[in-house]
Amino acid sequence: VLEPDLPAFLSSVEGVVGATHVLTDPEVRAGHETDWTRRFVGRTPAVLRPGSVGEVQALVLLARRHQVSLVPQGGNTGLVGGATPLGGEVVLDLRRLDDLGPVDGPAGQVTVGAGVTLTALQDHAASAGLSFAVDLGARDTATVGGLVATNAGGLHVVRFGSMRAQVLGVEAVLGTGEVVRSNLTGLVKDNTGYDLPGLLCGSEGTLGVITSARVRLVPGVGPLLGALVGFASVTAAVEALPVLRSAPGLRALELMRAVDLRLVAGHLGIEPPLTPLPPAVVLLELEGPNDLVGALGAVLEALGPAVVASAVADGDRLAGLWRWREALPEVAAALGIVHKADVSLPVGALAAFEAAVETTIRAHSPSSTTLVYGHLGDGNLHVNVVGPGAADDGPVDAVLELVLELGGSVSAEHGVGRAKVAWAARQRGEVATTMLRAIKQALDPDGILNPGVVVG
Ligand SMILES: Cc1cc2nc3c(=O)[nH]c(=O)nc-3n(C[C@H](O)[C@H](O)[C@H](O)COP(=O)(O)OP(=O)(O)OC[C@H]3O[C@@H](n4cnc5c(N)ncnc54)[C@H](O)[C@@H]3O)c2cc1C
Image (cartoon, protein in one colour):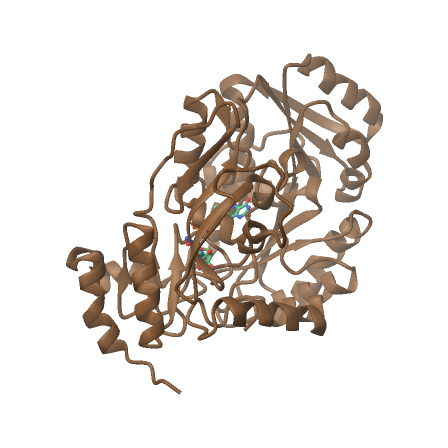
């Protein structure tokens, strides 16, 4: 058995990436050692910034030779501690892999580097009259590598599916040090065996370091119409789902609660978006070319008295509606260290979950503040608890227990990271966990990539 030899590893890495891309200054390292929620704080001896797939491969081979563990990191916006060097690992910052390949218009595809930000990918697609289907609040910082590695969801899953549905091909350096290139020509149909790009989606840096991805693009965004639709309760909003989901051109269906919107109003120093503010507010976004006003009118009419208030916006005013939804995670973070439960539930259990969740949390942490919002169209709620100390898992554990009782998932879109390993194992069962371990062993036999993440 080889012993880890960090000094030997560190003395070799400058020869691969150059001295300017080996960061050891404590102040520079600090931003890579703490996650966005500030709940996960690790320590790293160095942050390495490779600039090509060849450099990534050389670093992984060196790490293997010297038995040094690596944590791949993109924008560091992940919310489950998956990119935090909690065990003193070396951080691989992949943001220099920022090539934007030419948009293949006829195919509606593009190949981009893992370090490209979501905003840069969206802008690149838009410059060719197309768009990229995934969008989320951390768009300016989150990278393609991170989005693939976490199989990110976001605001338009109800229309286009999550990241896995967009990724056709992947290039990655496996834990063995080999480079895999799978379907980089972007074949839409390729049934030659196991779906390797799909396997790397959601692998959270545990199987390979993603260096680039071939993604599908969708038609450029048409005219948009947004609406806030108020309901007397979350139960009423959930009961309205069949009608809401049938709205023509639907591309977002988000849930917010009055109690949380009041916190946003206080934070932003503005009046709530509806007066009086109904207990549950759904943000609906529709995309043309249909008669959107007519389509929305038909939806509201079909819902009848279930709708207790509404506000409609298009053009520049649409961003004002989205501000309410996108400010919710910011407000939670401004209140203190955030404990996050990103869960999904069968539609039939959503209202029961929302009704029980605050009581469940208060039983463990009576003075905590809880914010609940999420992607209603996907059955995905984000429960944010502020108040308990960074190491106090009690309230979130109680929430996840409730989720499993109701047949849901302990991670809808943020991944397992280091935060949800035991819970994910419980949810998927022994046979599936053994399968995951076998895959990890095959692709990363020395366990040098993101140890402790996903399968523990
Ligand atoms: C305000 C806010 C809103 C958000 N909204 C959403 C949302 O709506 N939906 C959603 O799904 N997520 C959301 N997120 C979470 C986050 O943005 C996503 O998980 C995103 O995919 C992370 O990308 P990243 O580049 O920041 O990855 P990081 O945080 O750097 O890493 C995340 C994971 O991916 C691995 N990783 C990163 N790059 C690579 C690579 N090149 N190769 C292999 N592994 C890699 C890391 O090791 C880690 O396990 C939000 C976060 C914030 C802060």
